[in-house]
Image (cartoon, rainbow over all chains, first blue to last red; front, side, top):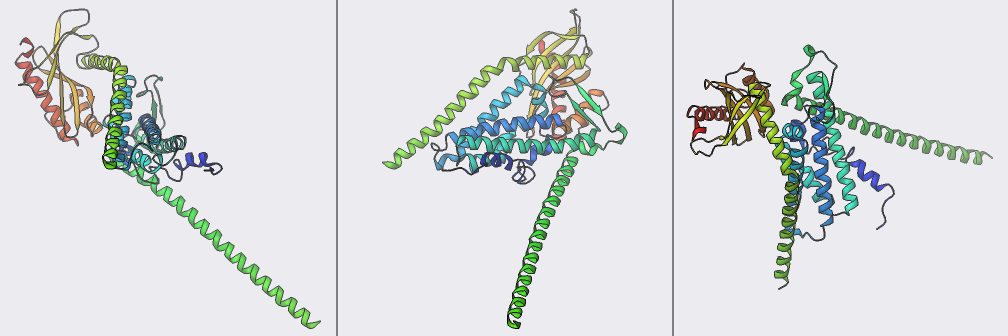
Length: 247
Length: 177
């Protein structure tokens, strides 16, 4: 089958913008609300999630012709759970601070709808390379969405950005931007997560609506322009006819 | 016949996937177990320091396997670094409820008074609320551990029960068994 030109790029970008799992499909919201208190935790969650998504999508795609209809869901869950367990073990061994910060939310990747959803909707129908690119795009899109939430929550909730608390292999750096007495600690609490999530969704909906309105406006303008052109052409034809008659 | 063949094929496929998964997990466990054990030892040592101060260290440890104590799993005798003089004892307690598992160290001084707690692992769903509103104030001494209304009450109740269990074990001098 001939591939559409630029398909790989489109396949990768769709997960980041048009089909962003968190902000467009509203999937995987539980870890998004729970692990976005700091940028570091969000980066950690995003990376672990992306690794699980890529590995499970690639394996599901590889086995798509072997796994029959009846055992599709249990087989996918076994595959996803395996990768989550492996990722959990390696995080516990080599990034213990990230492991203790994310806690139960690493295990909960197993039941994240995005992972099972991509396996079911995409990897089971496409080749390994395309599934890999799709998973990478979705993973990056989800990570960026987590980062955007964590950015506002950490900035408004603590007034600072700190690195090195979870990823202890980098030196501890803390930049205090807002004085501590002016920070809004609600943004560090679950309520703050909901507020930030809601506001981001509202801004995105506003931008989308404006885009659609603009498109509709352009279409209306085009229609008017065409109608005017047709009118002018009709007038010109009538004038020509009249001129011909006079001659 | 064709049906039977199909079912055998399906069973073999699922069995093979499960077996391959088990092998992968086994391999990952083999590669990480030593490091995980070492991390756990480090976090226990850090916990002892957090409870008894910079120069504290473990001089003796004992596994507790007594059905009368629901949460206590290990006993540690603590001394000052470079000396055999006992300055207190700590108990490792592990418990779980519907929100997840918690493992913590509970420290007592030589007069059997509760000193503080240190968390080894906390897999509770409300871990952050529990830490901010209950564990940190108990560690600071600004909250009585029996006061469990904190926004993560079930987790706090579990910790309170774990402390009480360790206290009971300490009063009974369980390590002498």
